[in-house]
Image 1: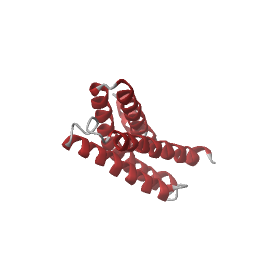
Image 2 (image 1 turned 60 degrees about the vertical axis):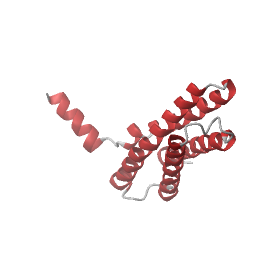
Image 3 (image 1 turned 90 degrees about the vertical axis):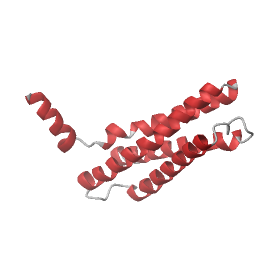
Image 4 (image 1 turned 135 degrees about the vertical axis):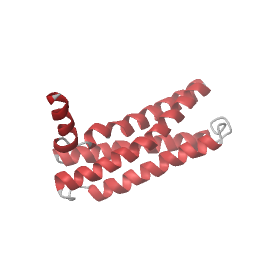
Length: 145
């Protein structure tokens, strides 16, 4: 029981939670982009559905990463982490983009085969680029530029 209490205290009070959560939107946007490219190359609707599932999960995980990032910034950096304002802007942009792609795709399941393939795929690529940039800026906070 002592181990469980120490574990819960470590997660909630000692260790920052953002690093445990932030990898999800990075991985999910990367996987979504990979699957949409494979879907285009193989002309496979199942791969497009997999990309859609990944981008929808990325939208949800972006909320968790953003909230924990703001909390850790306040707790560990007294609200003054390097590049915090640009990271907040990029995180909001990532959330809006991934949510927008998810909603548009949910309302129009045939979007990938209806001739909007390039713009749809570009949205996936842009979301991964934003997540990758956020990851780099997070590394700058920890390791410097």
